Image (tube, rainbow, N blue to C red):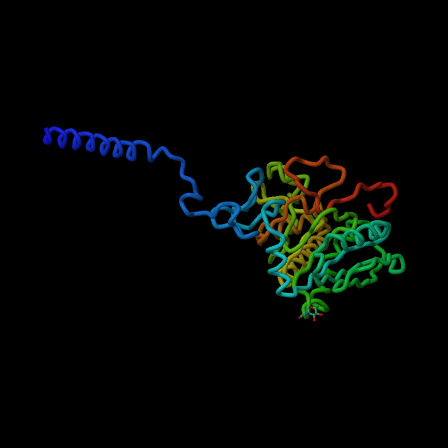
Amino acid sequence: MNLFIIKTGAGILLFFLLLGLLYSSVWQPCRVIDPVEQGQMLPADRQPPGLPMPGAAPGRSDVQTLTPWLAPVVWEGTFDPVVLDSIYQAKNITIAATVFAQGKYIRFLKKFLETMEQHFFTGFNVHVFVYTDQPIEVPQVKMASGRQLTVKTVPTVNRWQDISASRMVLVLALIEDELHDYADFIFCLDVDSQFHGRWGTESLGDLVSVLHPGYYKVDRSAFPYERRPISKAYMAPGDGDFYYCGGAFGGLLQEVHRLTKTCSTNFGDDAKKGIEAAWQEESHINRYLWINKPSKVLSPEYLWQDFKPREPELHIIRFSGVVKNYAEIRPNV
Ligand SMILES: *[C@@H]1O[C@H](CO)[C@@H](O)[C@H](O)[C@H]1NC(C)=O
């Protein structure tokens, strides 16, 4: 009798042991691995603010956020402004910005400066350099402490193509003569534009360019690069990464110094041969950035065009070209 109970008990035990073994070997691999349970990630409510753990990086899957040479492409939702600002606040950086308001383009300056004050590197040292042929027309815009504006008088130039040509030379001279002692970064921006949202520390990098809003979704064969081999801005068929804006670029002083030096030299070489590149300065910048890859690329959030309908991937428009009445701004067009 006793022996029977022991045998039956052992049998039942063996049965459950086998069942358990079967369960763990058959069912275990089918379970969805939860990173929280696996200890690779803290539960959402226990994560320190602004510091997602590795493997849980925030980001965007609907847009390209990294170039093939591993430079970030900055879109809303790919960075933490609080973390970034605290890094650069500790360094007490100064950002220089240049803007050209010649001829009738002076009419865009007031809105540009007012909106810049609201959105461009708020809380940082900013020094804006306004180049104009009408210094008395430069509007008074109240600026926060740490921010200043310097007016530079330049001769009147009528064609915007010529303004674009002289820009490079003037920015180069500014970096060499005045900025190298105290500014860390510089941005060169088009005046016929307004800020609508934050443009801040997320845009900082060694060499920074902006994807052109008209060409970030088209094949590179359709990019309006300079295609004549005789030009120093020449881009062969099949060459090129992106089509960048001439209306906004920047970076570390020494990098923008190299860019403006190369582009103004190439521009001058073309001029000696009687050539003007398809999109002047923009063509030379695109050639330069093909050879010297930008270390950070800004999405078209950083230079949209008011006349363009907003695309779904644009969660914010930070800076945008205003709709121009070309008849009014002649002869600058
Ligand atoms: C920060 O930089 C500004 C501008 O260059 C300068 O005037 C100021 O003294 C600096 N502050 C500190 C704490 O270094």
